[in-house]
Every structure is written in structure tokens, then in C-alpha cells.
Image (cartoon, rainbow, N blue to C red; front, side):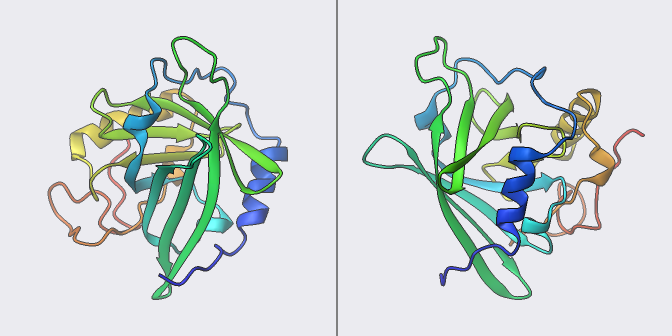
Length: 196
């Protein structure tokens, strides 16, 4: 895939680093995190909107180990029919912590790193809820291109109770996902009911 930088990614990273939205410091990262189990491919089920992902569909994140023990991050998607991707690296924020917390720092433009806090993680590592340093950042990820509708509803309700603006979530299209039962993220317009 030909590599393109996501338009506006630097602006998004800057907002994450220096934004003044409500902090997520009160939301603990998951404990007992196993980085090797987190590796591999994740599909983006939902996200709060930002310039650096505007109009992106078929969004995926691929995590793999670098020789130095850090994590290689490749985010990819399609905008206007053109593939886009960006590569970065992640590292554990507190590698000495026991049990290990699901809290990382991610950089696409070194030396700048931003928070990547996993606040919910399926025991089987089938889905994850991730935020940044503030509540303007939220992603729901899954190992499959779609997430069971009832499970997604539960995640949305919990995100709402934690102070995230779930009514603003976008649901990017994923290849092979169609509308109807179980297809909650078939299109950006097909947002499921959020219990508002």
C-alpha cells in the first residue's frame, strides 16, 4: 500500500498534547495488561471525530514488536478511494508497574508522544476502548470488522457514563460489513441508539 500521511495528523497530535478539554486522569487504565496479546490487527469500530481521521473508512491499526521492545504502530484507512497510512511507535508508560497497566505513549512525530490509555479490554482481547489525555479522544476497536450490537451498546453506555460525548461518535465503514443486524458500523450514518 502506498503510504500517505493522514491529512492534519500533526494538528490532531498537537491537540492531544496541549488541548484543554476535560482530562481523563480520573479514568484508570486496565490492569494486568499483556502487551503481546494486544499485538496484531484491530478494526476501528467507532471514534470521536478529528481532522486527522476525517472521511476515513476501512480504518485499521496494526501493532507489532520492534527489535528494541517498543511497539510498531501502523494506522491505515481509505479516504476518497485512496489508501492512507502512517507509521509510529508506542512504548509502555510504566513498564515497571505490577500488575502492568494498559497505558502507553504513542508517537507519530518524534520526539512528541501522546497518551494511549486502554480503559476497557475484553478478557479475550477481542475489543478495546481507548482514550487519550482528555475526553475529546475515544476509540472503540475490535479484532473483527464489526462488533456485536448488544456489546457495542454496553460499551457506548459505559463511555457515556464516563463523560464521553457518545452522540458525536463516528462509525467508519469496514470492508465486508453490511447493514442490518450486527452491522452497527456499516456506515458513518448508521450510528446505533445510544440511550439518550
